[in-house]
Amino acid sequence: MDGSFPHHIPNPSIPETTEELQKEVVAGKYDLGIAYDADCDRVMFIDEKGNRVRAEFALIMFAQHLLKKGQGAVYTVNMGRISKEKIEELGYKAWPSKIGHTEIPIVMKKQDAILGGEISGHFFFKKFNYADNADIAALTMMSLLSQTNKKFSELVEPFKKYATSEEINFRVADKQAVMKKMEEIYKKQITGRIDGISVNAGDYWFNLRLSKTENLVRLNVEAINKKKLNLAIEWLSKLIQG
Image: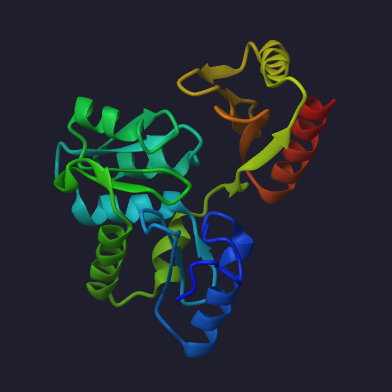
């Protein structure tokens, strides 16, 4: 253990930081990999093929494993559309929340939700006093994997319906002006304002929100396929930076 983190910063939500683990999982023929952040309240999973498993997929799997009839889960508005779709398809409830580990427990308590999650790898559990805990998430994932004869990659394959970006951050001179501009451009396509703006533009949809501490705008984009996603990212990047 080296608290100076000589190899990379301890942030599993950044793809580059799990590259070593991904290679190790494949080389060792392991069933999964588990990447924590520095204080172990966030976690990212790697499947047996060495692929990063999106937090949305992990949340759906937890819902399948933990929820009972009439219960539900909380997801953040920058999570992929598949979160709400699949949880409701399973017969459970799904409630949106602002982004942030202090925001999700508020919605969970209000709705009496059993679990919650966000794309950075925070997972929250009612039985843990609505708090986030990466160890509980890791143990839950190992528990559900041990109860199936399918591989990790096979379990998440049905969730890969859309093409989804990682969170993209833009440093701008005036974040409020950028948000006002985007609200005007997409005023007829805004579907929510829980945190920033959520927009449905047909072939692609996105959430755009402001950083609370820096002159950054944070973008999460999703589309019906990879080609549409790349075009959407290119177009939205021009709008935000232009």
